[in-house]
Length: 72
Image 1 (cartoon, rainbow, N blue to C red):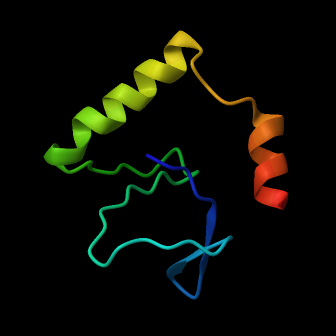
Image 2: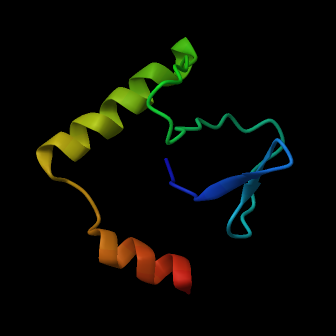
Image 3: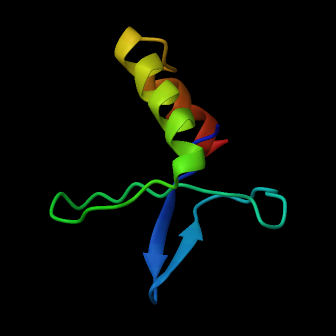
């Protein structure tokens, strides 16, 4: 699982960086809007749960490292 930053422009999700995703790739979008709910497809729930468990354990990449990578 990868985290890719994006913004909404004219109602569409536009990635902040170039990436190669295979046609039909499943993606999850977490919006920064507390009042909005979202559904995770059942086949991706376990992936999301595993990622959240990793974060809870502290098995994460420091924010500074992520930002440095994004800035290239």
